[in-house]
Image 1 (cartoon, rainbow, N blue to C red):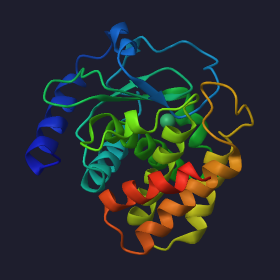
Image 2: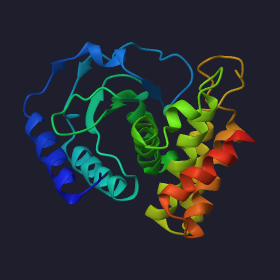
Image 3: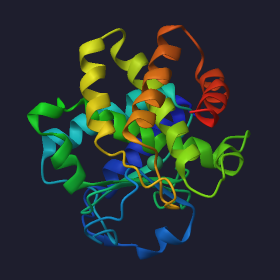
Image 4: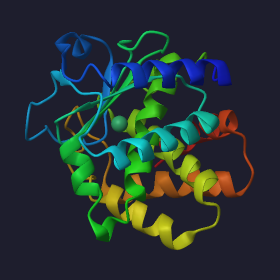
Length: 235
Ligand SMILES: [Zn+2]
């Protein structure tokens, strides 16, 4: 699925659309959608899809990060910015030649790029969204299997796979992982009856940590996804 050929197609298409600029595509929200933060967005700037952020260095860094993620997580999504303060994954395909779409909110990115978050939290959020794409399209049908009265199992599973990616990305850089977990913990809350529940701060941290340890222990991604499902069900 994630061949160098499809990666190249994705990047070429992504770069080509970068020159189009603003696009209106409000229909993406009609597909299956998952997001990074459980609370309702404080804004509703989701409809205008942007192909660049007005910060070329950041855009380039993001492309490099996405290339790294696609080497670990077997998905091939398109990628767009929205102005929102959340990040989303949808099974709606917007960019030709890709499958599903990751939408990252510029307001969220700006928050995560503050010095005390170390910047690596953006990588973790991207990996979390790509993990939802994996859940949507995996032959194991994780998105369906993890259905419950709230989104919590799907979200913690995506956190665990993001932690796995961070372990592969950084190796045993425990200090950096600590700041990633701190940033992601801040997204947790205690609204466990809310259908949008993403888990408590402790659960989100534990899921990330377990994925990181799976990577340290040399598990393959598919095995981390299987073992991760068992783990989040008892968290
Ligand atoms: Zn999510």
